[in-house]
Image (cartoon, rainbow, N blue to C red; front, top):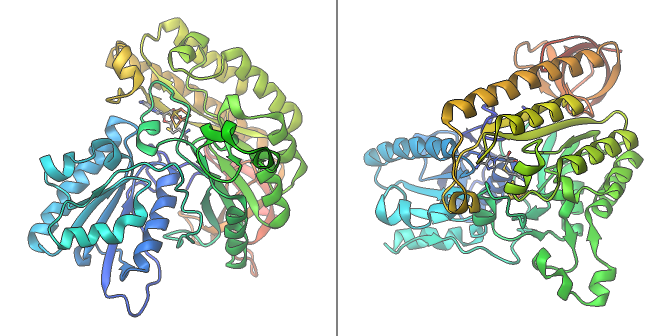
Length: 479
Ligand code: SAH
Ligand code: F3S
C-alpha cells in the first residue's frame, strides 16, 4: 500500500473494513471506502460512532443490516465506481428489504437529495460533517422520515472521538488534523464537499498519537487537504483567525509547531503528513523535519502543472518559479528528501507548450513517484462555470501518458540511486508475494521487501541494505 490512497491506487479502493465488535451489539454494519486517505480515516470515525449505537462491523455484505459507502467526488470516474456499487447493494436489498443503504462523504455532499429523492437508490445521506448525526438519521429511516444531513460545519473536527482502527496492519495509522479546504483551486470540488478549513485541537491530536503508540502503532500520517496551513487558535474556521483575541493569537499553534510537539511527545513514532500545498509550506516546517529523526523524509507536494499560466487559471497560489525555489530549498535543508506529486493533464486551455513545461518541471525535480490524472470537469466548480473544457479527450490521454512514462523513468532512476545503501525500515507485515519476506518502508516512503529473520516482527525498525529493485520496490537483506 502506498502512502496516498487516491482513486488511482487500486490496492485499497473499495476496501471494506472490520474491527472487533462488542458482545451486546446486535446489528451489523458493512462499511466501504473510496477516494482519499481522509475518507478511510472518516470511516473509522463513523464505525466508532456506530459501535456505540449497537453496530458491529462485518466483512460480509450479505449479512449486513446497514451498508454504508464513503464516497469520493473528485473525478467523474470516482463517482461512476460508487454508482456501480450502489446498484449491487440495491440488488441485495431486494432479497433483504430490512437492509439499509447509506451514502457518506463527498458524493453525498455534492448530490445532496438526488440519490435519496430522485433516484431513490439510498435510504440515508450524510455529508462529511454530519457523522455524529448518523444514529438519529438511522431512526429517521426506521420512522419513514427523510434521512439526510449535508450541513457543513464551522467547528466539526471529531476531535474528541477516538476512531476505531479498521482493516489496517496495526503498525501505521492516519490521524486527521484539519478538515475542509479554503484554497478554491478552480478544478476542485473539495471546497464544496468538505467545506471551509478548520484545524483540530493539538492536544487531541497528540493524545491520539500517544494512544496509538501504546497500542503498538509505530507510524502516523497526519492528514488534511492542506496540512501546512494548519492553525489552531481556539476553534473555528481558519478564515476567522483575524477575529481571534490577542491571547488566542499569541498561543496559536501552526503546522511546524504541531509537528515539533508530536515528534517530541511521541519520540519513537514515525511521523508522515499529507497533503502539502506549495504556497503554505514554510521554511519552519522544513527545519522541523530536518531537526527530528522521527519525521519521515518524504514530502507529497502536488504541483498540478509546470506552467505559470495554467497555474493562474487553476487559481493555484504559486508560480512555476516559486515552486522551483521551494524545491531547491527543500533539497538544501533536507538532502535525503524524497518528493512526490499530483499532476493534472489537459486542464482548460492547456497548450502543447504548457504541457511541455509540466514535463520539464518533472525533469528538474525527478520525483520518486506521483499521482497523475486527466482533467475531469466537475459540475459547480469555478472551472466548470467559467472555462471551456476544451482539450480533446485523446489529447488529454496522450499528454497524461507522456507524463506517466516520464515518471516511470524517474522512479526507476530514483530506485537505482538507492541501491547499495542501508535504510532503516519499519516492518508493516508480510510481503504480498512471499510470506517468507517482510514488507516495510524507508523514511523516504520507498517500499522494501526482504527475507525474514527470526525474532523480527511487524512494528520493528530494522536496518536493510538495498541490493536490487523493481520500478516501485527495493529488494534487500537485513544487516
Ligand atoms: N489537497 C488535496 C487535494 C485533493 S484532490 C489532497 O489532500 O491531496 C487530489 C488530487 O486530485 C489533486 O491534487 C489533483 O491533482 C487531482 N484533482 C482534483 N480535481 C481534479 C479534477 N477535476 N480532475 C482531475 N484531477 C483532479
Ligand atoms: Fe482541492 Fe486545491 Fe484544496 S486541489 S483540496 S482546492 S488545495
